[in-house]
Amino acid sequence: MTCEELKPEYGAYALGIAEGEEKYEIAAHLASQCVECVAGVRSAMSTVAAMSGAVEMVDPPARLRRRVLAMVAPVSDSWMPAWVPWAVSGVMAVGLLGVVLVPTLLQRPQATSKLEQALSILNDPVTRDVSFGEPAARGRVFVSKNKGVVFIAANLPKLAAGRTFQLWVIPTQGNPISAGTFRGETDSSAVYVRPGPIADVAAMALTMEPEGGSPQPTMTPFVVTKL
Amino acid sequence: MLIPWLILALELSGEHDKELARRLQRREPGAMDDLYKKYGKLAYSIIFAVVRDTGVAEDLAQETFLRVWTRIQAFEAGRGALGPWLLAIARNRAIDHVRSSGARMGRGTVELDSNAHPSLFVDLDRQIFDKDHAKVVRAAIAKLGDNQREVIRLAYYEGLSQTEMADKLGQPLGTVKTWVRSALKVLRAELGQEAAA
Ligand SMILES: [Zn+2]
Image 1 (cartoon, each protein chain N blue to C red):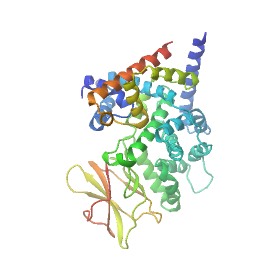
Image 2 (image 1 turned 90 degrees about the vertical axis):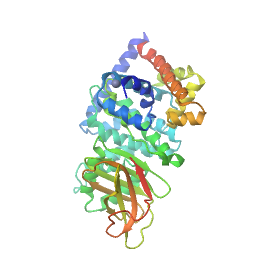
Image 3 (image 1 turned 180 degrees about the vertical axis):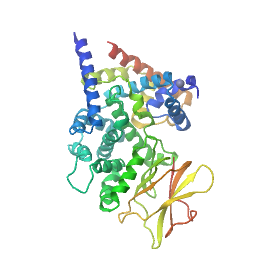
């Protein structure tokens, strides 16, 4: 896209409604520091920000403030390093799911390293972040091509005995590549972290496989999230 | 004689946010509370206007503050516009929520926050969000034609893409794009007058 072609799209981009290819092209073009387009988009962002003035004001529940502060409050538990509260909150970036999942994470002895890995992926500025929903399960995937994948889900189907969930990287070309197996929690939720670089991801998929995992999926995935 | 006071208020708000951003970066106690006091209600209101569900709005507002907290180091405290950045994140969370729920799910999900990258908020006007500002914005929106107002509403509150609006309104994509563009132009002109007044 040339600057001239981009110019009419500044507004849609600032409104967050630019589509598909175009959106990526604009983001890439802006990342190239084009002075004119960055200025144009900023001006549009400024207009969109100003529009918040027309929004009808609603009082949030008082507990919202406590929830926000609790995310960043220092904790006294001696075993817990200082960064844990906001790391936990990082995982809570999944919103609705956070309430269920954070306690789950903290119960585990390996929780802190898992959180640390998850956090480094969540904090990577290039991490892509995609939600998925009904019918099979709902949740969110964060993919950083340098740092790895965080997969968070609730409402997963029940695993039959001797079966496991297996996460797959679907590359733009070629067969799915296993991103590891996990069992999830008794409440049908799961937080799975697969650290390490990931090349060339077009989508992530989830299947149920025999214990230990399969070299290739043996069923149609019940979750597929395009990235 | 109102004008110097308005300018002063704007500057103070900007200075306050610069310092607030630095305090957040230093992880100072109380910084998050100040951020919440300043923008909590507005962020929540923006999210609620889109998702129309108090429980969801609460979760997404929490998520918004969290995202600011985890990304604040990438924010240029001296030059960035903290308020607009936070509100863009809030709106993205809300739009993402409505886009990824229900029937619209299957059609490819939207990458979040590419339009909320901290670098885009450098040297942006720092808005002051008060009652007068609301009046000015409402007046600006009232200047829009019906079609312009409708596409802005669909974009801002429902997060519809221009293709989706074209489908919904039974209009060619080019027409919808023209409406969106001209609507923003009107708003910019109207709101720009305020800043320049
Ligand atoms: Zn350009």
